Length: 323
Ligand SMILES: [Zn+2]
Image (cartoon, rainbow, N blue to C red):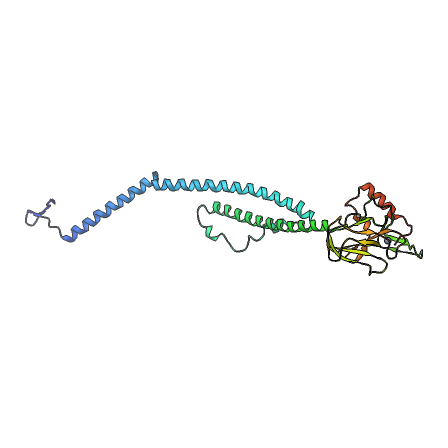
């Protein structure tokens, strides 16, 4: 029950009832409600300053967890960077050096991350710094790994090629040293055995009895096995690729045909004295890109340094060739 209020009317000298209008009542009620709400908000606010709500506590914990993990991730990224750096150095200083390709510079390995701001959406937060750091480091690491893997692909290709080149290059003596009577003449100016005039001898002569096996000095394809080249008699040319051709002349017999694929050490023919020759011997030439070069530098395949020295000395003797 609402209290009834009175007031003293000095004109009538009596108490009169205070009549409240509806408007006044509503106004009062609203005022009351407002004040209540204001106090409540103020109360929550004050409590909030000194006490975290359960949700705040939860978010705080989440944030700390994320921050800690970001730091751990950054540390792991740094470790990976160290490992990658070692691989990059090995790549530049060993692999690429060995295969004679230019090292990849530091700028090339780390390039391509500038330009437009690719981290725009990560900015503007309180913890942008940490997230940016990790993201940038991961991006850089990915980029470097990509370049490194490309480099290794290149090295692999070069290695395969080098292996083929090493197998192809004419690198052994075409007549076994135990079968050889002697090395008769080397590459250089020698006396022509027929007219005794000094002229260039474009190969090496190995004297050996007729029928002595002749071996391919490297992998390749038999380009010719015929006697249609003046002076060489029955001769074989093996194309090794990479610009190399080896030539075996004055043979008595062939053991291969044109177009046949041969491996280093395969028996391809037999020593003879066909063509322009003064006695059974193998005349051996190496051509590189169409030029006849000195075969003496190509026997590392099956000669010891001592044997090579003996061979070299014999090859230098300025006698006459057997042609
Ligand atoms: Zn010769």
